Image (cartoon, rainbow, N blue to C red; front, side, top):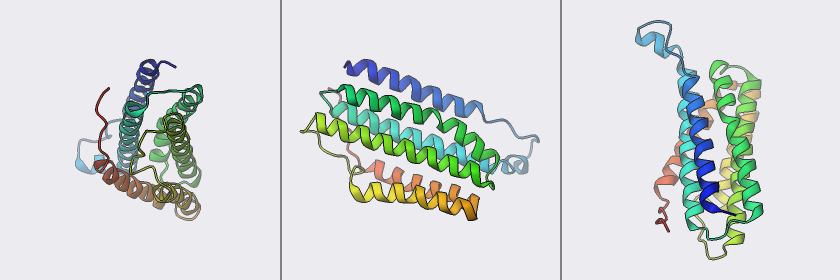
Length: 189
């Protein structure tokens, strides 16, 4: 597979997803700070989702810089991962508009779980195809169990207290951002 073409396509899809999310933001109905703050769930869900997209874009870039071989399986897993990524703007908008509703919160968390899991599958495939590739600090069983466990806990929380799930995802995003700082970027080949 042509790695450069796959990376270019992936970058384009990520950019489009981020653009779609920002286009869903609308100015407040009033010109006051209070008017802006009444839309806090929309802004919070946007900030969380954009940050997640940016973190995963960095991780994807770093992973593909280390890889010499991109197999057909990696190519297909990348497509599945991108598909789940394209659901993020929809879920973000829905949860931002209905932060106290169970179904939007559950769908949002399910999309993030699917998106994370497909990234993990792709990451593992790249490592299988390139045995000399060193794992990032975020690619270990404890980090992944905390990530997936957090999303599953959020789904359960959403049933009883929907808005708490959004705050849990925010906490997960903060932890992932802190992890990102410890990842040593791979030099361009």
